Image 1: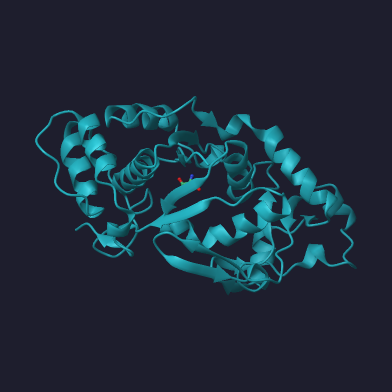
Image 2: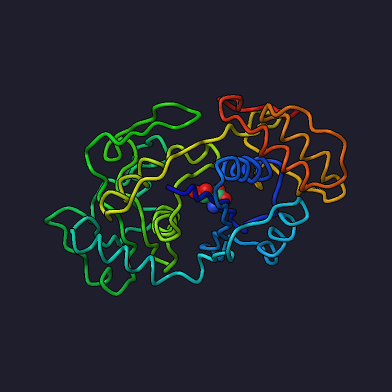
Length: 298
Ligand code: GLU
């Protein structure tokens, strides 16, 4: 099996120190295994996107010395792939249209491990949508199955939960016509032949949902590695919401050295070429040295 990894940024903001850590770790793990490293732009949610961010992200990656294999894939251009996956789930009776407004269903919901749990109203066998419902475009939800789905993460170890109990029926296609992350990521990882996924621990809770979808769609399950998150003083993940500063290209070397230190890589020799720092990271990459839980940066 040839290793194929990927970095999959969402252009909802510019790259920050946390994204640099994910890019570097996914790149080093792929290249240390003699593998390919793909870049996929997860531009599925135009209302949340920032104009110009997708191009800025690619230019920033290049400035930090990253070279990806093949062409960049844009999720916004792959709707037929997601439609085909939804079609296969429809054939198996695993999805149903949901007419509930977010406000209504969330008012009825209790809280699970990743937010409110949908109560399954539109998926009940005796449920009949009203006339006015039928004039609306529905969302499509997957029936979460009552089963334990687990996997062995290369950093976190074993992780499992029961999607029906802990998550609930989740949306694959939104009522506004946009595809949900969970379906798109599974369809794309399979289509691109991704064998290894290296990403932040904020997505650990999504992985059993994705493994379930892979099984229903007859797709292979990749190896998973969930990286520790970089946290600010308040122990919050660095993100757009917590005002993570965009990467400053004038500080490329310092920033790369900083994330390499977080990943417990040995200090690299003097150089002013970022690609040499990446080569060093590849040569010294040891997944066992990566910290297991959140890293405070301040
Ligand atoms: N696009 C997601 C993000 O930026 C990453 C998705 C993934 O790696 O599966 O958080």
